[in-house]
Image (cartoon, rainbow, N blue to C red; front, side, top):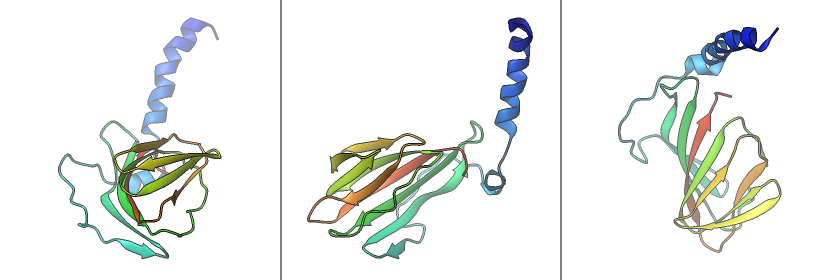
Length: 145
């Protein structure tokens, strides 16, 4: 196959990738523009932390891109969450306290007003790094998992 043949085939290949849906993507609704109030969806308390969704998971019009947002508070002395990796990227917006965002073994201390970013595929966890509660919003963007 020469460059010209590949050049004509490439758009068809890319189009096929954008219309492929996973089982989860088929269940997600398309998100609409609007305001979303914290507390409108039921929070789930766990040991030392409370987490609640703000924006239900859904797909953006741009294609097979999942967007989700939630709010979490972690009490001082609580165990950090499990170390993980994802296909999506995560953005943390710190509202109070001090958060440790550990990415690939490197700790990043974030205070109220700071923003953390973990791109898809990086190993990470978050923990309360202070003596008071830490609270933050998380926004995730990426393909359905």
